[in-house]
Length: 79
Image (cartoon, rainbow, N blue to C red):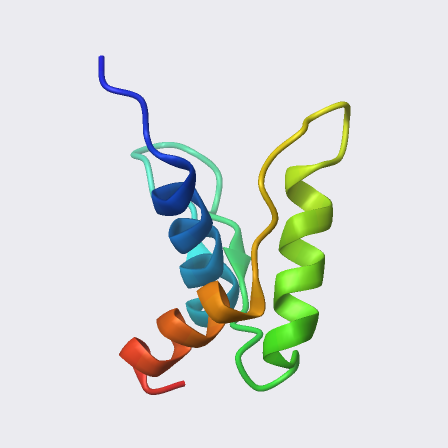
């Protein structure tokens, strides 16, 4: 199985914070959990800082999410 690149993982995380998300609905399962969009609540720099923190918590050592990473995604989404 191919491994996702660090860049694609950073983009996925930024998308989740900017757009929000919802866990999948399953037949007979519990009600899905939802995460709100933080596009209007966090600045570009704050998003980068939070995501870098998350990526480096619990003993992980991942490349930082930069303000530039966040800006590119926000621009592409118009958010």
